[in-house]
Length: 268
Image (tube, rainbow, N blue to C red; front, side):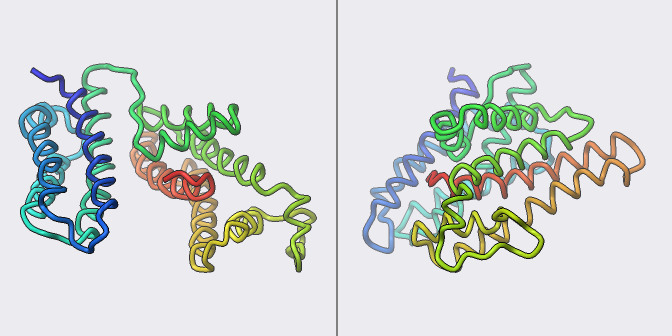
């Protein structure tokens, strides 16, 4: 019988295969011949191998039902020609749920193996080549979140912010940013701000104004989230309440950091 963790790994690979197959279709609608074999393989591995164990170990009520619904929806889509966006929307929902499922199974088995999403793996591999010390910081934050047993998440939040800062500083050094036509220091600053650096990186790549604005807003959200986590220690009455609430907040923060890192490092 196939091991549950091996089945989850295979499902992750099949999801990547399905995404590539869908993106490779030139027409708007994806024919069943392209999607159905992969969708069936995903459903078979999940319902035959993963689901029963996940029901016993899931840490979040409703996780199994969410995955059930998405997998069944993908199967239904694959039965007839469907638009790409419908598939990609469901795949976007399925990836984080399967990662959560993998972590739950690993915790139940006492495994220390670090399971990475496609984006996390891409970020980590890019950082390994570019900034090894920063890569180690990012991996530490991933391990903190995967283990999920910290009393305080302030250190993890700061680690994620520093990873982002180091990447931005590396890609947008002072001398290059200040040499841009029309550059002016923001009031009260003697060096470019992180917002100005992000703008420099994305504009140099000819990104649209909308993409630049979204990145700047995400950066502001990260800063606000880190500050909120730092304050929360003093605002919540008990350590257990603090840890539970902050665990959710740190995962939300990480999603913004990952999205920004993927954009800045050009990780697909």
